[in-house]
Image (cartoon, rainbow, N blue to C red; front, side):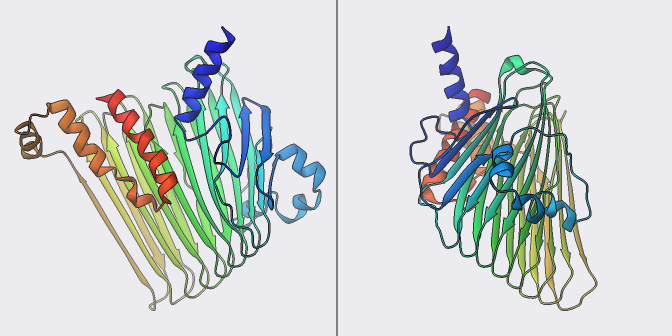
Length: 363
């Protein structure tokens, strides 16, 4: 029985890009419910600890980092948390392979509340791959993820989060990223599985000149689900740039795609793009783009488009011997092209495998 369970765990974790053996990873973190199973590294200059262990080992981070990102936007954060990961990439270090983390909901009706802290010291570069997953037995569970990112001068982070929940799970990630001069923050979000509800509106503060941020999201909404997903970038200094790009498909669920770009300085550039595809008339997609500034010397733009699969596209593929269900899957796969995520080839291939597996199971 134990062996069978472990196989299930492995399949679920592979579905969110987490390699249980840690092969091809600079470091790994694993937490089930509120118990940290593993935290370890395979590359010098990378540090991974549970949040509790990090606060004991490095008490200075409580004053300098813990909760400080939320203070930048004047927001309170949930303090009743247990577990979560502390990831630090030391000055000038570049991760050869991605750092991976998995937050696993296992028990029925469990309320998982974690606090994560990610620090990129000056000149550091890293790819982070986080997978969040739940077992079928965890029904009606809840996940709250508090995440704070600190990207120091000329550092960069490419953060990819893949969600694979079950129908009864409620999810509420809350994150803030602080980017200093010349820093870069790239956030990718992928959710292709059924879920009861997701509410998330991550914020990135570009507080140093020349800072860059990009948020990408690929979302599939199923019947009975509500996904209110957005991103916000605040540009506080000159020469900053930002982009928000989202792709949403509704198979009967409610998808709200938000995006907000705020220029608090002149001489910044920003663009927001939202595209939606409605497959079932039971579903809805709301696109809510916002641009805000008091300066004239800025370049800010947005575009939003929502549509459906055209009948002539289905008929064209049918004439090539492809069934209607297969044709629909092909069109959705093209619409949800993960090229927009800007991932290196080895990570893009993993995400493409997840997308392909999900579409095959759905259609």
